[in-house]
Image (cartoon, rainbow, N blue to C red; front, top):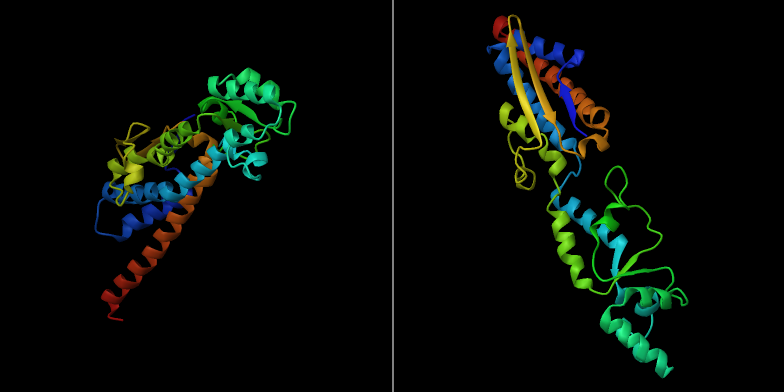
Length: 262
């Protein structure tokens, strides 16, 4: 889902007009500067607030879904530290031999059939990470809530590369504002956002007699799920209008001081 936001908030527009009337700059320059600051506020308000925090959240969420088969509570909480150690303690020689074959061959159907009849029944067994299993657990905001049945992995070494792969996407929703940031001169964009480039957005300036329209488009697929218009853009507009009014008060006070010498 994409979201197109135009600067048409009445309070914000009036504040910009008032600013134009009180500074020694043309309207287009002032509008571009204020649009750049508005885009910067949108970037700041678009989750996650920090790159490392976002990456940590990704790691936690994925590990809510997947775990090593050796980390299953019934094993990790016992004297047997791994699934292999647990099998070694099985007393029935035929069962033990069967489990060793299952473990060696990765026969998931046989393993699941066995686990359904044991204390391990609340787990699903898989050879390695299945991205679809993770995606199916994500809510509309992209986060993973409580997971009823975690997936225990035979090949737990597949987990870290998958976490790293998903972490690389952190900052994409913010980067949807990058085209506008570059067009309107927004500064100090963190590297973990800038690395994604400008492909998920665009920015335009339309001029006609007596009218200038500036537009910023964030077309990243995640932006719609973030309630961007209400949660991000509206808050950004309100914040920038407040800042402009504060700036205007200082400018008017300074101009009055120059004029009247007080």
